[in-house]
Structure formats: C-alpha cells, structure tokens
Picture (tube, rainbow, N blue to C red):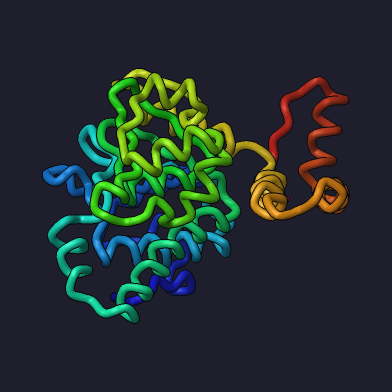
Length: 278
C-alpha cells in the first residue's frame, strides 16, 4: 500500500482512507474500524494505513484530539484470522519480524502523536484491538465491553505490541499478568474497577460521551496537552530527579505560550479562557 503523505492534502478532513472511516469536525477526528460483519478485525492494510496516519498527525495542527471506535457494537476482534493469522503461519522469520515490528509501530505512532487519543470501547476488544485501545491516552467503555489480550490463546506470548510495558502501567503488574498469561476477557465493570476504563458509560451514549471528552480536550491548551503526553511517555524511564527537571523545562516552555497569557487575562477578567494552541 502507499504511505499516507501529509503533504498531499490541505486539510485533515480531506484524508480518505481505504481501510477504515475518518471524519473530522472542528479539529476532533473520529476513526472508525468498519468491518462490522466480522467484528471489525485488523488487516495488514489497516495496520499500515493507521500507522501512517498517526505518524502524520505529528505535523497536523488542524487535528486537536482523536477518538478511535468500532462500528456497530464492537471495537475490534483483533488480527483477522483469515487475512493475517493464516498467512503468518507460512512466513519465514524475516517476514514475521517485519510484521511484528509494523504492529508495534502502530502503537508507537499512537503514543507519539501529540494529540490526546480516546478509545470508545463496546463489545469485543481483543488481541490487536485491545493493544490499539491500550495505546490510547484514555478509554471510555460500556458494561458490555469485553477486553482480552488473546495472544496466549493462539500459542503466542503475551508480550505483543508493548503490552508488557504499557498494560502494567495502566492496571498494575499483577492484574496485567493475569490477563496476559490467561488471555481471558475483562468485562466492562471489572475494567472500570481495575482502571482500564476511565469511565463506564451507557451503550447508547458511548460515542457521544467520547466525542464530548475529545471536544473538551480540543478546546483546551493544545500545546500544553502535547507537552503532557510527551512527559508521560518520556518519564517511564526517568529517575525522579530527571523527571522533575524535565517537567520544570516543559512548564517553563509552556509559560512562554500565548495560551498561558490568555488564561491569565481571562482569569483577571473573570472570563473563560479561549485557547488557540500557541
């Protein structure tokens, strides 16, 4: 497939992907995995296209926040059995490593894009689908959601797409170990208790609630949000001393933005600040 070239379009809403749906409304993007007849599985092509898209978002000022969801009651059933798992059994080591690195590159692209990313999870969220939602900054889900890191169920290790690094940081080592060793499904109410879901929402308001949260973030200090996400990513491997110094530098940079001055002036005038991301 051809790589997504950000320079080819004047505005992000002009992007027309081949393997998922993409809508942009006033800086809030909605990415919908759209193969509902098979519970929205991931294919070789959709992996690559999503990777290229999230890499390109680093350079897009017209996207302020992103929501990822699945069509018609399911988030994603993970790697397609016929389109991915079958072909993998016939690949040599070089081809397999190329594939596993590509799937990891999607997670890295979601983590490294400066925009806050929200996963809206209903129904099945399994395998690669669980890893994609794991890469998001926040997750909203329904009581009917079932999240499962299924890799051991197909004879693989639980360490896939960053799961052994990211998942324990979300729900803790013991709980992550249980899910990664057993491959069992985590229900929606359990997922909220464990901290996987930021919030449990009604099935019929899931997308609206996710978009409302995205809108709230998009209307905030976008440069400040990008610095926050960068700090969360980088500080995983820092000592406390290094983290505090990095945050001091980040905050000093943010204090030079016009949004900081806008917020001060609005406070003095007893008005709500209108951030512009600069």
